[in-house]
Length: 150
Image (cartoon, rainbow, N blue to C red; front, side):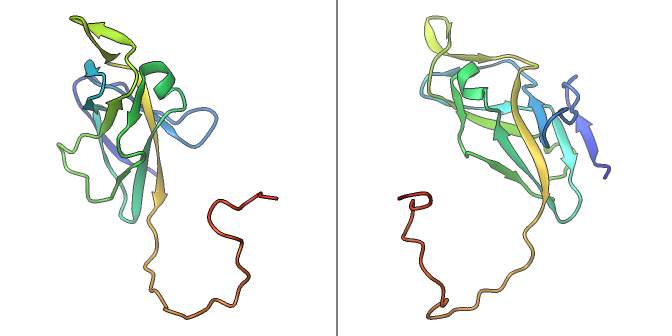
C-alpha cells in the first residue's frame, strides 16, 4: 500500500520500524512543556490516508521515562478525512514529571528530532447495527476485572 506524505520544515522522514508494526514519529520543533501544563508537539508531516483507513497515534514505551510527559488523549485517532495540505499531525502532551529547567521553571524539553511517539494504520470499523435483546443466553464471567481471578 502506498500512502502519500507531505513533510513540513525539514521534518525527520518516517519509516517503519524493523521489529513491530508501528511507525515512529518525531518532534519537528523544540518545545518546552512546563510541569503541570500541556502542549501540542508538531510532528512535521501530513498523510493522505486511504478511504476506509485510520491511524492510531500513541506514545512510545519510553516517552514518559524520557520526557515525563503523557499523551493527553491516550491514543489519538486520525481519520481518513484529515488529509488537507496543512493538516500537520501533532501529539498533545501533558508534563507530569519535570526533567529540565527553563529560566528556573520546571518542565521538560522536547527537541526537534526526538522520537516522541508512534502510529499505525488500521481499517475502520465496519458498519454495524445494534440488535436489542433481553438476554444473550451466555454464562457471565463474574464482572469487570475478574479475568484470571481465582
